[in-house]
Structure formats: structure tokens, C-alpha cells
Image (cartoon, rainbow, N blue to C red):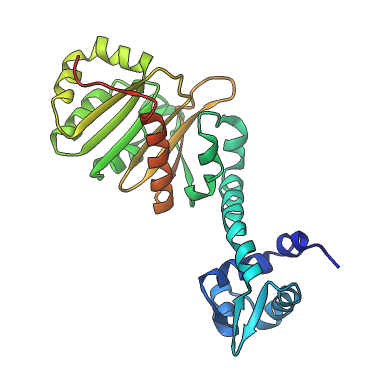
Length: 260
């Protein structure tokens, strides 16, 4: 008899059935419609799950057993993680994810339907148009950056002026550059109640922005160079919470700047 792990992982139909039944008991027709399976293709998989005490029949409905509930609870984050990696497998292979805390790496599946936004060669040194448009539509902005683009000081100052809540974390080198080259703007920004600035002495090898609308993250290549062309972007609610956790992780390890 195949081991339980093989029963679960060797069939896409069985995985989807277990995950679907997490939401509660379903009739055969409800499962067929939700998963777009034929009844003849689904019934043999249900029988296998019943034989291993993962699924049980209750009248005309099918439900998870207690063992099925335990396994499905662990299966869901695994499936989501694999989907996030497979969706952008080349990106994850080429980039350094070491700046993402281990507890968040384990929950990388929460990034959900994450997609790559890539600049053309002609726009290599310009911020992504979609990135700026999404920020302009947001009411709250949280960002982490080890780099300073010339457009950002004025851009974020204008956001603060129109009432957007802004919280930024800069590395020490990025902060020093802004303090030296944009001190007047920085002083003005620090005067806003809706503006918070933090400085980290860590060499943070990522840049990200999380808002009430979207989450975007850029990573360094494994050779140490920053990838300015590609952003990973997700609009899923779970990704927004994931991004906020990442921001708070570095916020707790940073110093708030009250004035110059």
C-alpha cells in the first residue's frame, strides 16, 4: 500500500479535493463544479482518500476526517509556497533572498499571485511606471530601501503633502546620501505628522513597498548587484500582510529619525 505522503502528493486531483473540503462538506456536484472535474474522474480519487481515512461521506456530502483536517492544514501552505516558487522560478534562482527573515521565507506562499513587472532597457534607470501609479493611488505607504533614486525624495514629499501616511526605512548609507543631497526636503518631510523615517545600520539586501493596495519587492542578484529592472508585485490581501510583517521586522531593528 502506498505511504500516506505519496497518496497526497502524487495526484493533483487528490490535493485539490483535500484543499476544497477545508471550507466544509461538499456534495459530489459541488466538488465537480468547483474543480471542473468529471464525476468519473473524481470518484476514484475520493475512494482512495476514504480508504486512507482522510475523507468521509456524510449523507450526500463528503467531508474531511480529523486526520484529513490535520493534513490539509499543512498541505495548503506547502501548495501555496510551491506555486509562488514555480510561478517565478528563474527569478528566485537568480536572486538573493537572504534578507528575508526565515519566518517569512517559510510563509512565502502568502505572496499569492505574484507577478514580475520588468522595465525595458530604455527605462532601466527610471522607476516602474506601474509602481509609481500604484503608490499614487494608495492611502498608506511603507517602504524599505538601501538605494536612493533622484525622483524619490520629491515624490514622497509630495505624497506626504497630500496626506498619504508614509513610513520609510533607509539603510545608513541611503540616509546619509539623502541628508547630504536633499537636506531641505528631508527637513520639510520630518515636519509632517503623517511621515515617519527610520534608519537601519544593517546592510539590507532588498527594497520593498507595501501599501493598502499592493506589495512590491526587489532583490539583489547573487553577485551582489541590485536588480533595478524587475519587481515582484502582488495585490493579494495575504501579500499585503506579509509585506507589513517584513516592514515591522526591520522597523524594530531601526532607529527613528525625529529631526536633523
